[in-house]
Length: 133
Image 1 (tube, helix red, strand yellow):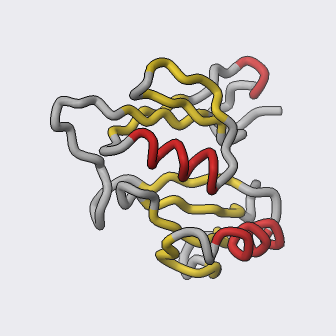
Image 2: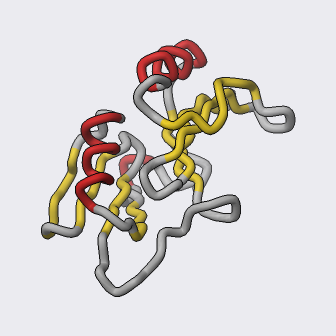
């Protein structure tokens, strides 16, 4: 099956994204402990890579003063789910354990049903179902 890139899924390499964080242990606790993402790889005491099911998120506490790319103009990390019901179920599971940025809703312009959380470094984390997927 071809994705939007036109390259058959089985012939594509996986996507990796690496982002700076201020405290790798808090980040590990949030993404693995709270969100339940499996650890794909721990490369050092300051770098974890998590498997989202659609690609990989790497977080590194660089130790060189690098700041997270978060805040109102920062990065949004989207995790795709299989249905609107799964989005609602995930929200119910996480709403009392995370900082909720926006409750589940249909986007006013795009065919996306999602909710948003904030991670320990204020990265927006979106759980979504895209109607076309």
